[in-house]
Each structure stands twice: as structure tokens, then as C-alpha cells.
Length: 197
Image 1 (cartoon, rainbow, N blue to C red):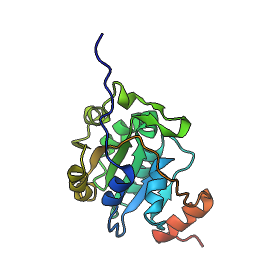
Image 2: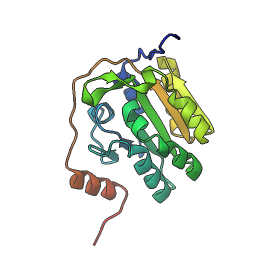
Image 3: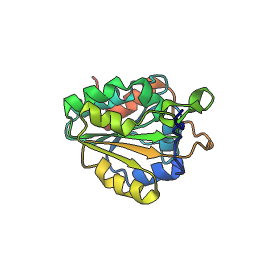
């Protein structure tokens, strides 16, 4: 029997996210539920952050819709491996759409953090970077150290990149940004200059 593959992630997720989002400017950030939202929110609750609280598996598609609707804006999806596994089919749709202004960063701790920290498939047999490449993403990367995370920062803002960041499974104190979907949506729309009469 072959040895079971385990996640080799050792990076501090909050430190990694803080590097990726340093000086965000007008970057539009869409977050998956749980840790991704906590980590993005704790860095500064911005009008340009769109937090998804109950749409597990839909973050990449929300990001794609936003990128297509706002082609002059850069869109970054920040999500976790569990959420990405649930929405894996979206990787094919996003690749096929070829939105040049969309990038995805997956915080991969090989755990389903919101349901008890059970091992996810990325800690066993699934390589999300390889899946994205097989779906047609032409630019993919996996970061295992902070120098590689730093290198991803500019790439995620300049190219249609799918990146996996191998983080440690350690829990961090939760920062809860706004959870009212109507409020977050209206605030985000106003940040985009979309105001209904």
C-alpha cells in the first residue's frame, strides 16, 4: 500500500494573506466562508471586500461574474481548499472564460476548517494546482514559503493566476467582518460606483 500523501503546509495563513493584500489599492477581493473571510477582514474591513458567508463552493464563480462585469478592475478570490473542492467545477468555467483580470488564491491547510478540521482531499490525494492546470489555467503556482508568497503578490494582481498557498492547519482568533449580505452587497456596489435610483 502506498504511503498516504499529507499536506506539507507550514505557512502562517494570516501572515500569508497580509503579504498578498498589502497595499490593496482598488483591488476587489471576494472571500470564501470561514478562515479566508476572517483573515481578509482582520487586515481592514474595506468597501471593496465582498465576503461570502453561506455560498460554499460558489466563490470562484462570484469572482468570475464580477471580473466579467468589471473588466477594468482587478479581482482576487481568496478562499480555502474545502470551499475550492466543493466548487471544483468552477475551475473549468473560469479557465474557459479567460477573464484576464481574475486571479484565485487558495489557502490550503488540508482541512475542512468549518466542520471540525477533518482532513480534506488536498491532504490525501488531490493537487488543486494540477486540477486547475488540467482545466485549462495557463498560469498556476504553489507557494510553500514566504518568499514564494511574496512573489505571488504581484502576479495575483497582474495575470489570470491560480495559486495554492500551503498553510499550516493552526487556528487563528476569528475576526468577524459584516455578515449582513444586503449591507455588504450595497456597500460593495457603491464602491464600484453602482448606485440605484
